Length: 302
Image 1 (cartoon, one colour):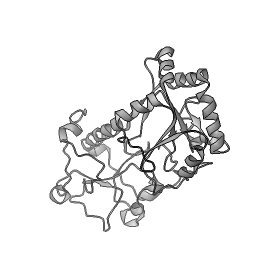
Image 2 (cartoon, one colour):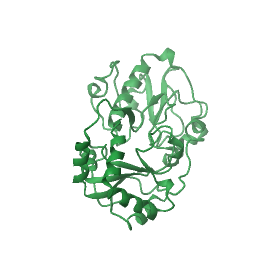
Image 3 (cartoon, rainbow, N blue to C red):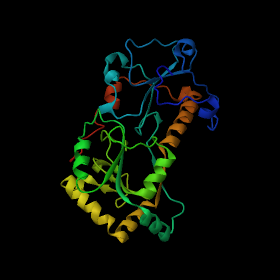
Image 4 (tube, rainbow, N blue to C red):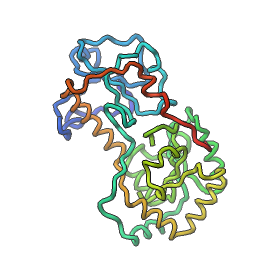
């Protein structure tokens, strides 16, 4: 890996690839030592240095890796020096060569009893949770929206924008969310294509993704004229146990694969492709056009 970001935890090769169908791969984070012999070099998209380092040999694969959406990602990849430099992309978008979605939705194989859902609901004691890490790049006025929402009902803010903490993507956070909160705010940094339990998600900017998600399994904030109107509806739903349980029952028809599982599997995809180089030869003439153009849109309210 050319420039490994701090948030990627470097495990052993056995941890990264041992569970993969094709597992004979090795990861090096020492480009100066191993770059000359690596079959592929992975460049994290923030930052990308200029000039572009030359390939050690003609068939060496250059991989662009980025999990943030274009509006808050580094703009380094816009430099035309990177045109035609990359062979593969490794991002959250479905048309990437290596796809690492934030979650998968699948049909549940087994549904919980309504009594179980009812017991979970009766233990909940706090209206809303919001997990957010990036306040400096708040391009969607999310904070102002949530501040107005807090005038109607309690919102616990976790991460960089609040005073409460829970490890990112940790199981204990999922468990706490399920048992304590009625609603979860899914207000992303940016609303971009593909970027997106016993708790009801409240989403914004997702109108273009409704074909991907089942109606009745989330609340669209864009359907309400103001944060205050949304807050009043959430209060009504909290006090209407039957309607709230019905919504959780519809949500229970789907299961989600976590981002941790998705990212782990993406290393398997990389290893597999490296063993089939003849089937995966390609180049991106203009990475900015592929990654940025037409992917994002504004929320109506945020």
